[in-house]
Image 1 (cartoon, rainbow, N blue to C red):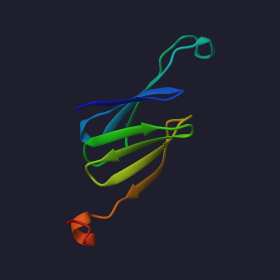
Image 2 (cartoon, rainbow, N blue to C red; image 1 turned 90 degrees about the horizontal axis):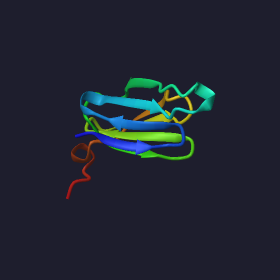
Image 3 (cartoon, rainbow, N blue to C red; image 1 turned 180 degrees about the vertical axis):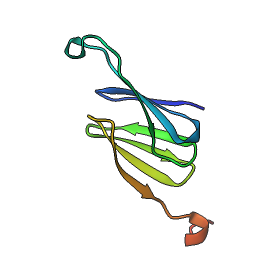
Length: 91
């Protein structure tokens, strides 16, 4: 499964094995060249991607929420969510 989201600066695809690929949109400022970056922000498959004004957030099967800088594509935060079974959150 490959997930896509589009932000003002990037087309982002979340893939298996925690990999995320980011492509810039070609324009006059970058001489119409496409820049691609491969990022790893998860220890397992990426399940969801969401883009906002300043951040791109990816959620993975590993329970991590990774928060990426919208402008640079650099990982800012990796937040480990609690395991629902351990925390008694399952019904």
